[in-house]
Length: 214
Ligand code: G3P
Image (cartoon, rainbow, N blue to C red; front, side, top):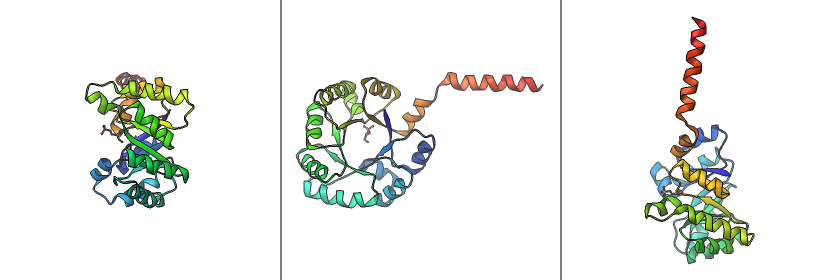
C-alpha cells in the first residue's frame, strides 16, 4: 500500500520523507491556507522534496475555471496531480484532463456511486473521506470496501486513495481491504511508528548495557 503524507508543512514533509516511507503527498485548500505562504511557491518548494505524486486542489467551481487552474498547476512540477471535488463540473474537467494524460484525484467522495462515476470519467485516484463519515455516525471503512469491490468487479484502473484518516486503525483497515494508497497526517504517521513497548525495550537494553561498564 502506498503511503501519502496529508500535509503542506515543509518541515513535516522533509521529516517524513527522510524516513523513506513516503510515496506521495496530498494538499487541500485548508492545509495550504494554514501555512500562510503563496500556494504556488509553496507547492514548488514541496516538489523539490517529494518525487512522487503531489496533489494540488482547484478552487474553481466551473469546469472552464478548473481547467485553467489545472493548466497553471501542472506548470509547477511534472508530478503535480490535479485534485478536483466530485460534482458535475468536476467530472467534466476530469474527463478532459484524463484525455490529455493529466493525472487527477477526485476528492470529497462520500458514496460508492460518486467513486464509480469518477472512475468512469477517467480519474487516476478517488479519495473517500472516511473520518468525516465516521464523524456523522456512518462507517467510513464500509465505503472503502464497497469501492474496492466495484473497482475490482469491473477492472477499473482508478486507484483508491483513502483520505480523512484520523488514527492508525484507519490505516490498518485500509491495508486489510487492499486500498491502493492512504493519505495520512504527520501526527498519525508518528502514531503508526511509535509503540510504548519498543521505547521500554530500548531503555531496558541501554540500561543493561550501562551496567556492563560499572
Ligand atoms: O486531504 C483531505 C483530507 O485528508 C481531510 O481530512 O481530517 O480534514 O477530514 P480531515
